[in-house]
Length: 512
Ligand SMILES: Cc1cc2nc3c(=O)[nH]c(=O)nc-3n(C[C@H](O)[C@H](O)[C@H](O)COP(=O)(O)O)c2cc1C
Image (tube, rainbow, N blue to C red; front, side, top):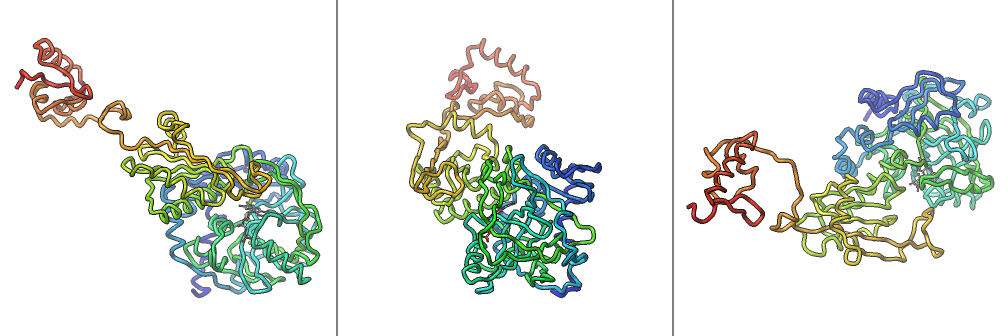
């Protein structure tokens, strides 16, 4: 691709927000809103929220862009039901990143260096009641490992420490943590460019752990090559079409300052940690920058912005694991109400061989993070809580259908992890299999009467064999039914009416 073909607005956050607004997915606040009030408004809304005048600088800030599977689907350009297929399709069609000069990078329209850098003019805001301070939750970090040139992308929160300094939470196990530790051992700094204001596909890449070039992974999830521009002060490439980039380096002094606490993605606060300090050497942005906040850690976890991304990653991992076990599920649904990949529901064919539900459970126990697997029949809509509850109440018997196993590696912030770092897992087999011949195993549904008249009377209709009342209505083209009752009554009076094995209406033998 040449720079001239470049459309640096196609994956721009502002463009997506405009599209979401057209589809009724954005709550817009034109009135001034204090930075202290942003989070309460964001968390109260089930839509994305656009503040046109946030804080005294009257910054434009959007939040909740990825806060539902529907919005993620819009970002991927598909229907909600097709998101996993699209995710897999994109991974099967790898794309690459390429570099553009600074002059072609919209994110370099404004460049602040030296004394012009003042982080306190950016809309850092307090996101939870007991957070250690205001932070940016939407930062995506781009780095190049100085030891081997490996490109890394992740998502890291940036807590405001002063006009030119930030702390970032680099405590959890991650590739960036390993790279930084190695830098510190060598006495080196680690340059990083943080993009703020990004397309949801960048978050998919940042939270994926897949082999290969992670800058390219960003392009792969976009389904298009991604233009990158080198930092003006640190030389580290970051997307040229981001809204803002904060450039700088983690210093060589290692872990030395308290970062946090933060309201965490697990639904609790996390402890403060000793973390590295980030020195900002440049802030670059678009002339009409749109700032982004990401709701991370809240009470209703379905609103947490990583939830729909996390459940998408999980569903793709579940399909892959079941394919490897030669199981074709009818449907898969990972819950948005829990952190990471803990809960999944799988529907399997009602004609599956005996034991198939157990095979699903054991295949999925092997997935990291997965703890609770519910298997239902394919007549249950796995996305519908009420249907799954019903299946649990009618098809699951605890002494027969429960699989419990312990001693699996746990996720570091799971509060149920045992002292040795392990967790227990449970599989619930709520399948009943094929419903069989008895009506008592069939689920009621509203009648759908075809009204294609084939015969002139109930007697004529029943000559073809036993029929449910609706089938008699079909045969007579009836859109009422009461006239059929009267004809049945006549047959009853003649002693010619009886009932079939599932209580169908039937003529007695003597009619013939
Ligand atoms: C909104 C958001 C904020 C996150 N914040 C942090 C963070 O502050 N520290 C961290 O280690 N991981 C954080 N993560 C998780 C990492 O981005 C994720 O584990 C990623 O895969 C790490 O990438 P890496 O292993 O390539 O470095 C966050 C994820 C999301 C979605």
